[in-house]
Length: 148
View 1: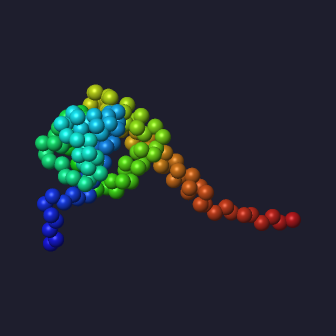
View 2: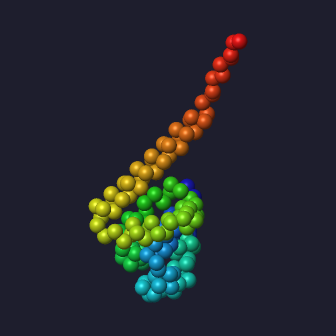
View 3: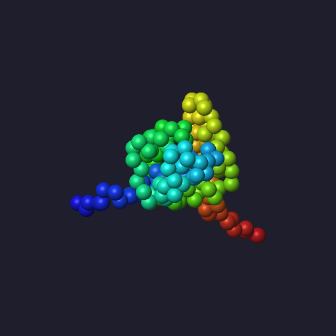
């Protein structure tokens, strides 16, 4: 079994850093503003977000508190998508940041879960419609020979 250096960052660290960047942006905070709230340099925030430096438990709790999310938020689905893909997708999708800001501003947990459920259901419907359209296009067309 291969051992890693204790302070070497991992893909999980990169995923956590990307989540911090997304949530910070959604809250309209600059790296400098987050750094000031945490009592660290903005360069340190840059390193956390890039996954270059690991984040200790106490610091991660402080970040979660400032961003108004539970610490567990940083560990959800960190392995299902490449970290850079997730952040690029979010930052390059029209309205994604606005949607994230609006979602983050919902203080009622039940309402927030309902909104998420609705968005996921909408995605399922859209994907099903695309699949139906692709299936329709792929069906062979029967050509009837005319007899005159």
